[in-house]
Amino acid sequence: MAALRTLLPLFPNASARKLLLLVLFIFVFWVVFMASKDHTEFLFHFNNPITLRRWHIFKGFFHPEGLQNASTSSAEAELMVLEILEKLNQQIPPRPFTDLSTTTSAKESTITIFNPRDTYSVGDQLDVLLVAKDYSGRRKEYGGDFLRARISSPALKAGASGKVTDFNNGTYLVSFTLFWEGPVSLSILLMHPSEGVSALWRARNQGYDRIIFTGQFLNGTAPVFTKCGLTLNTNGEQCQYLDARDHEAFYCLKPPHVPCEALTHMKTSNNNVSYLSLQEQFLFRRVNMAVEMVKSLTITVLPGNSKSRNETKKKKCQVGMKTPFPSGYTFKGRWISTFCEQKEFSNINDINNCLTRKLIYLMGDSTLRQWVYYLSNVVKTLTFFDHHGTGLFQTHVLLDVKRHILVQWKKHGHPFVTKKLFSVKDDNYIPREIDQVAGDSRTAIVITFGQHFRPFPINIFIRRAINIRKAIERLFLRSPETKVIIKTENIREVNENAEIFSDFHGNIQNLILRNIFRDLNVGIIDAWDMTIAYRCEDVHPSTSVVESQVAMFLNYIC
Image 1: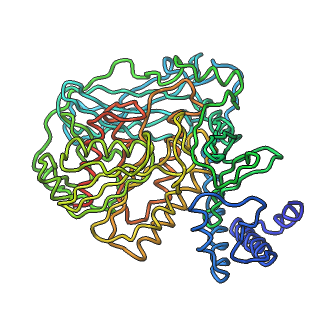
Image 2: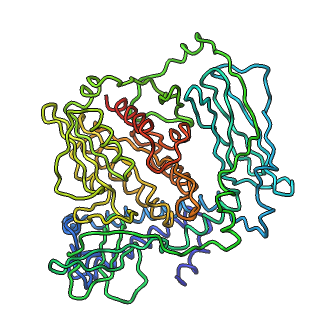
Image 3: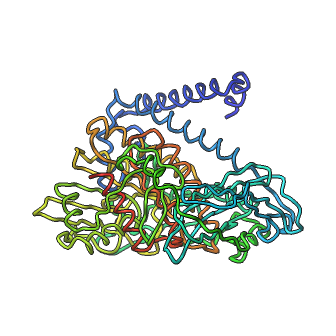
């Protein structure tokens, strides 16, 4: 590190510094590689054996001639992680505060319609100017407040997200597209003041120990429990479960006289630890989160010009389309896309025709498992196949043998956070699952991850997203016609344990996801936008939201 600090001043240019770091990274990998007695055991030359089937599979991927390419790719990925982190740190600067009264106040802040009109029609944009003030009524001089904007008409079961533009000087422009006629109410929630956002960001990236992982090993037939985690601060002997190519790692304290291969199950619990000061914790009491800033503001929207609406006819939904924000709105309980033409799929025959001869792989958290339950309820010919697992987190498989339909959900790899014991016998990270899909024009993959990453430093999420992108690129090289859809994270209930569960973390992860996948030929299902529009504040969205997500998916693949 001292040598690196000496060298860096010689390279004032940022690009030159990145090139230097890349060369040093490759050099380190080469030295370790050449020092190893068995090159094919690169990064797996440890005292402890490697557990689980997938690690033995991984060893087969590492041929001597391929290791230099792998190390180069890993170095590039690590530089990308650092680059994204640097940008985020610039966008979320430290905002220390001495007292709650100096933070943003929903009550004192002012909201006015910007350039108001006498009348508004369907298709018009309504702009609202928000000036943030503290509890003493003093105007804030910087931005960074985490806001959530929405318009709605409850009688019409209609809702849509608003777009927030932060001018970084205490003023915000909140823009709403008026999608339907009638009375429309406005809502702007102060989820967290900028000082709270800064505190959450600093705290998130300080430690890995907010979640306690407990692994279950088998000693013969008797279960043995031990501590596990993404990192372990211990001098004891460890089982190291490593994916060298993708720089993914998980560890367990090795139980005495039990081999590492005997790890079978995992569970988690919340740790009573916080990296927030007592003063900062006050910002995350329920009364100080998701506070309404709009006192009472309703406008009446008149019918729009049908001719002008027809002139902007939308193309059929297909993967690769850019998704704006908002990407749609709800009307009479149904999701309507703003950027592509949808087919309704309200008829079971239409759904069956779409799914016939399709292989569908759902990879991610339990919000995708909801799709399996929804499809089994709606499409009665899809029946569960016994995959010899137990519990909610086993692999779920639906089959329709007559129509040659397969729908499979499999949870993503570590970190997976739940108090319920779940099997890790066939665990895999999503990139490795994608690598095992042959792919063709009748194969579709849906990916979602994020909720389980919120309690951990953001580099874990960034690295996983990059690795998934690389796996999709490999898939497209062998099967470019395969459909890949990314479902973004959804909002969830406002929880007093904001340090772990705040939607601020999810919002940051959504921005990262969109950045990493921005130029890839994938479809986006914007669950974040959908759940704001529906005002569905639940980690597991309602059936109407799931129905809208599945309908969007069917539009992408058929």
